[in-house]
Image 1: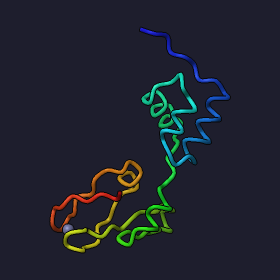
Image 2: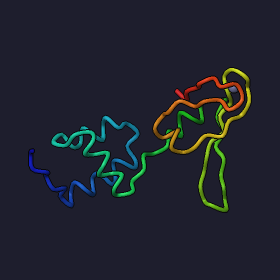
Image 3: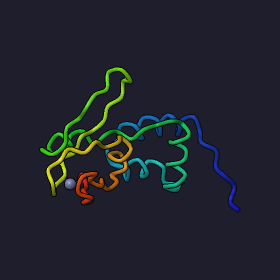
Image 4: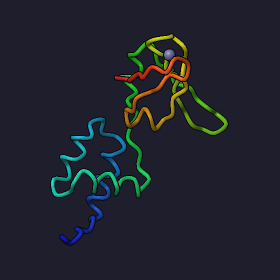
Length: 113
Ligand SMILES: [Zn+2]
């Protein structure tokens, strides 16, 4: 087993900034040529970092609205099914990881992009 290379303070700073602001995950990885994709993902998740939301792209879509829960201070998304035109509530995590959205009304699978 290869020795695990310790993250330097410099790398951690870079990860913190890039991971939460850089829209392209490929570009984040490119900044850490000596680390695997998994290593970067795991480290970022342990640091509690979140990927930036694809806000620009989402705003361009007519079938997406961003909702704000002021009590909890969290935001979410409503997505309109391509098939039945019903609005579906979508979790942050689904959007961030670009997971497929299954319509609760008709069962059709939709994607943001
Ligand atoms: Zn539907």
